[in-house]
Image 1: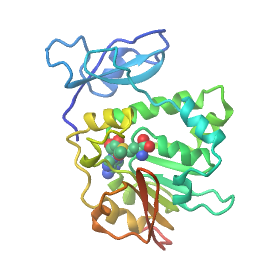
Image 2: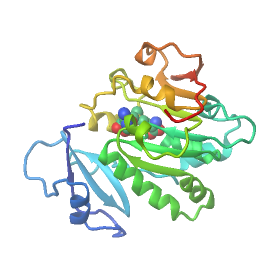
Image 3: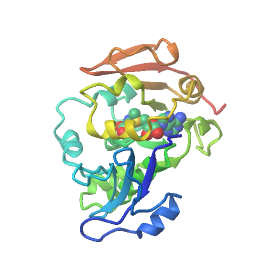
Length: 265
Ligand SMILES: C[S@@+](CC[C@H](N)C(=O)[O-])C[C@H]1O[C@@H](n2cnc3c(N)ncnc32)[C@H](O)[C@@H]1O
């Protein structure tokens, strides 16, 4: 896991935090500020800003902190005004109005999971970083209390788990998911100008995070219908395994591995 230092510091803005700085620090076993060393820029701050648990690199609070915000305009706009189904929805392969059971085994900021859940599917999200898990948990808490009924319904379809998705086989999912979705982080994405702000911050936070060597191989026996892997457009196949087929977009592609598993291994 990452060796980045994360400090819990005092809230910013209107005080709507659901817990105190000390409670947050104790819950996540993190040190709390003020920061005394001069190593500015190489550590991260975690704090409530206007009630949202937010993460920011360095001490410059002018650099915008990020939080999980399922009410964010771009996400909801994508849902409501998309003329074409999101590529990810094509990739998971839902037929007509069927509702799938999906595991997002690399949850991150939960953006892909939200798009899948907003289309009506149930999503179990696995995240092994305690920081990302805490940010997601907070986003789901606010999503469930949203004024927007669609966001509330979507948040209810999302179940968050803390831990490595390598534990999926032994976790207490009562049935195999139809689809397992993987979007592991890779070094080649770090330098790309197209890497969005949230992914850039995540890459900096988790820079020592080593991708599991056999995440794909381990999940293939666990998906009833398919495993979907998100890759940057020109990256090689994950674990050098050739997919059944691919769906490509402008900057990324989905490698799809069809499976035919019917029972828990
Ligand atoms: C590239 S991000 C995923 C972004 C995500 N698709 C989104 O829409 O926000 C990868 C995330 O997967 C998590 N991760 C990587 N391997 C994992 C594993 N084996 N189990 C659980 N989480 C994992 C990392 O901690 C990181 O937060």
